Image (cartoon, rainbow, N blue to C red):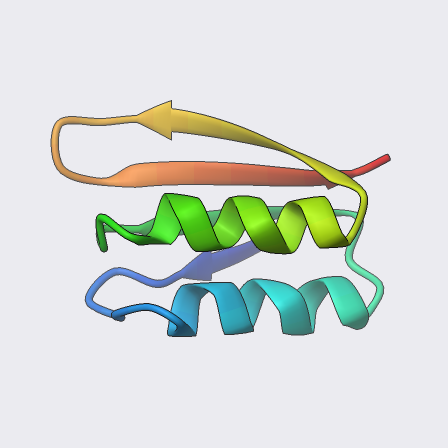
Length: 69
């Protein structure tokens, strides 16, 4: 599993980093992000890669687990 710590990054950077990891052949990526817009953009990247996305909510930080089908 690849882990991307995108805390403090504003969109589109978390999505860009996820897309790069998926293009690089990653099959499971965990993204930690605190930007409120990250969920929308990460979901779009996952959908375009035919991957599933699971969102684990914390009080302040969201963790997104993207798995290729």
